[in-house]
Amino acid sequence: SIMPATLSAISNGAKHGILFKGGVHLENLSNLKAIAFDKTGTLTKGKPEVTDVIVRPDVDENEVLHKVASIENYSHHPLAQAIVQYVKKRDRTNPLLQPDSLEDVSGWGVKAALHGEDWKIGKADFVGAENARSFANDAGSKLAAEGKTIVFVQDPNGIAAILALKDTVRDITVDAIKLLRDQGLYTIMLTGDSEKTAKAIAEEAYVNQYIAECLPDMKVSELKKLKEQFNNVAMVGDGINDAPALATANVGIAMGEGTDVALETADVVLMKNDLSRISEAIQISKRMNRIIK
Ligand code: ADP
Ligand code: MG
Image (cartoon, rainbow, N blue to C red; front, side, top):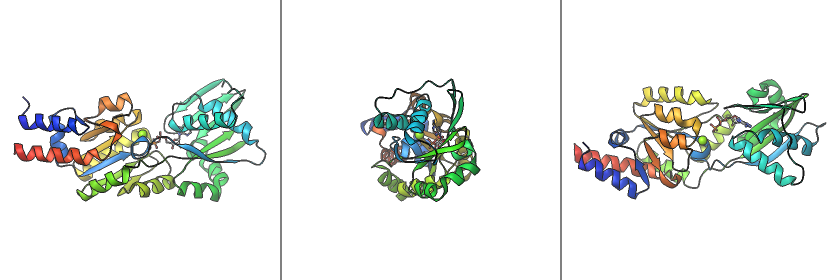
């Protein structure tokens, strides 16, 4: 049976835009030691925009962008959608092409055959780190240090272009993280993004630590390590990719406007994507435990 103090905590949460899916999570929340956050869509708005395009000297910028959009049109990744929008806005008349075949590789990028040519779009290691690094050079490093994600484009002749995309940290993020840190919690950002980009965003978001180059299943193993280190760890996420990590954490917290899978897997849901509700949720759980004990 549910104790009156638990019921009152749950209803108090609801009034403050926090949905607790049961009493056990309140117990865990009250003595949380660390919180891991997904980057894209959680600490950031998850709506990246193309800011820079650099092409190989022999490549026509409009032509390569048209082909990139034709391929990314079939990927569900937020970067892909941002690229398609950007290209369609630049050129409203030229209809996108139909790839012969396509593979959306989660955490890495997309691979496609387009009019008989092999193309790859995604992170450096996906297109070949050596070539990627020598193409991106100082310009790429500078863009990454600004917190921009670099997307590499490979055509049959090598790296044809790089696109930089910038996502913005949510307005509430820094205040929400400060509140948690003031409560003595250790904060960590997990991301599939590159080291340099992750560092810049982590500094902007004011988290204690970041773990970059985190492939979808690595989020789970990193969480297991954090659980060993801190005993009681929450994970906050919004995406399908985050669901396994949400399930692994002592408390899984989903952004209210996140994907259905994240919402279903989580123990706690934040209405209106409001990260500052996390410290409120912890306070509610502490109050409840004082009443019970
Ligand atoms: P995050 O953890 O930041 O949400 P993901 O695990 O979804 O990132 O993806 C990791 C990285 O893989 C991206 O930062 C990007 O570099 C690359 N990537 C994945 N899918 C695509 C795509 N469709 N187009 C371009 N790059 C992609
Ligand atoms: Mg996300």
